[in-house]
Amino acid sequence: MRNKSLILFSSFLLLLFAACNTEESDLGVNLVDPSTIYNSKTDTLYANMAYSLRDDSLATTGGTYNIVGWYADPTFGKVNASIYTQIALQSDDNALNLGNATIDSVVLSMVKDVLFPDTGRTYTMHFEIMPLDEAMEADSTYYGFNTLAVRAGMKYFDNTVTIGPTDTVVRFTLGGDIATVLAQNASASDFVASAKGLRIRVIDDDSDTGIVAFNFAATKTRLTAYFHHDGDTTESQYIFVVGNGAKHFMHFDHDYTGTIFDNTDSIGGSQRLYLEPFGGYKLHISFDSALRAFHTSHPTAAIHYAEMLLPVADEAPAVKPDSVLAFGYQSDGTMTQISDQRYYMGGDGAYQSGNNRFRLRVSMHLQHLLYQNGGSDYGTCLMLYYSRKHPAARTIINGTSTANPVRIVLTYTEN
Image (cartoon, rainbow, N blue to C red; front, side, top):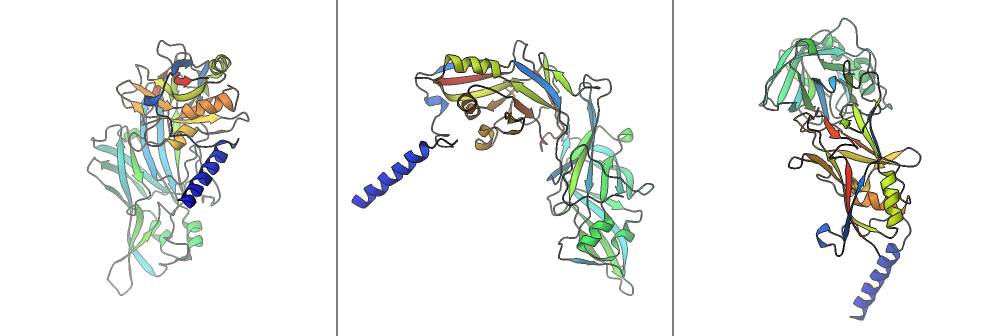
């Protein structure tokens, strides 16, 4: 019994020491529940500044889900998404030995994940698949604005394809000189350098307005060469990688002609705030004035619960994004995802259809601003990343001067 007591006492001392450490700690994150707060007070903070800002730094390299197609609406204009991918061998240790083979056909297969905006509709899309004339740099990060040169006058595929809700794999039979490109003897690195890769896009002039998302992590997303050797009629197949294991990225081409975004990179947010994925628009919101005033009036306040509410404007598109991500700006201009979203994963920042708003838990973030920054708020960045459920959904948020504005509602106690 004595040994057990010593162990318990030692554990208590260790816990006490950790709790008194001046460095930021996660201790106590889950100890307070909003439903068990005693003698608490509530307050509401209103943003003193907000604007929509063009997002020109969206890295798209290596994503699991890649989209192609186009979408447009009167507010946000038009966006066209395309995919750039290498053709690679399944392992860097492999060598390709098809130099003496006759390639009968080549099929690009991509696993369909979702269709947008109507998941239950069948879309007709004009696909164009061309060979790259420029190799991807192995150590480079590619962004939504990046492109690579394609080989002029050569198309591996140029035809319409119908894709519906029951389709699981979309197959493209490729032509051109791709058989010559694949029929070689080469090491893995030499082959990648030689083959360069593919650009996959949809020609919007004669395609339905829609976007298809492909799963590049699926094993059935691949390039297959069917071949035989002279004197042997048995057909064999060789599988190349165009998804997981091959470098790839997405490119987004925005056309804002005739919209409020035309010829500008930022829009004031007193009336409306705009969130658009694919390197479109993100939000910058600051509660600095309200937070400083709160800290002055309540210097010992302990934040038990706080949430940022983003009411959706009446004219916002009917299909809403799944959720919003929040990043806090630091004094040097850098930003990191707020601690609440790092620790409370699984729905935080999600759209609430019943209240027609997005809700973000910001309890830990607000406590940090009050007691690490002295109440200073350098701003919060809100953005939409690729969403599997609604990949191209965008939305409009009520501005700071509207009747139902962006705000933070908090519950606190003080000594």
